[in-house]
Length: 202
Ligand SMILES: Cc1cc2nc3c(=O)[nH]c(=O)nc-3n(C[C@H](O)[C@H](O)[C@H](O)COP(=O)(O)O)c2cc1C
Image 1: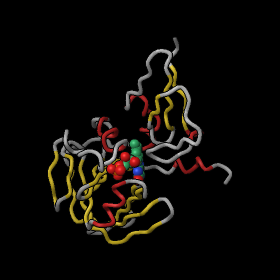
Image 2: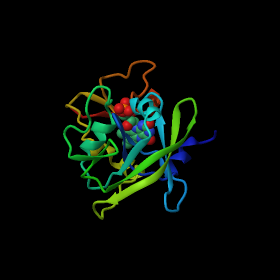
Image 3: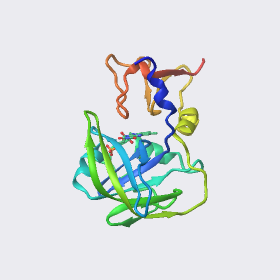
Image 4: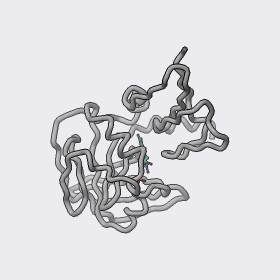
């Protein structure tokens, strides 16, 4: 491939994906048909606990993340595992068909799983929208806006003279002078070449 970064020009949004017992932050969402019950798909990495749980459940929700929403939600849902914590514990939510839905975001769609497609790293879950609601009229955050502003949104902090490495794909921050050999991002699996050095001057 001559330049794979052209793929970054596919515009995507920012969402919280939730199913009974697991949730994570996602950008790989597309609407693939219209009609009364549109089809929407989401690609979930196999290493994510949400992927394992989504194979066993029939319903999931996608909540739309807005430009003015609390960036802490990205960290909670995007950088930790549902296996180790209840990601909803510090936020207001309600439940529909046992799926937890955040109240603070722009709105949500509730989907019934209709099909899955697998490749080596991801599962594409295709769902039929069975309910949807919009809570506020605000601009949704795009993935490219997140790319441009992730350091300020995630409040990447470096103590003077100390070093942080920021993943250019998802925003995960590794603190340490050197990235270990063979390091891959624990969130998006990109290799160390995708990390940018951030160091405060002394
Ligand atoms: C901005 C952003 C976008 C992400 N997009 C996706 C995505 O589209 N698909 C995916 O599987 N993981 C995505 N992730 C990573 C998961 O949210 C992350 O690995 C999470 O910790 C998985 O949690 P779980 O183990 O509870 O499922 C994204 C993370 C961030 C911060």
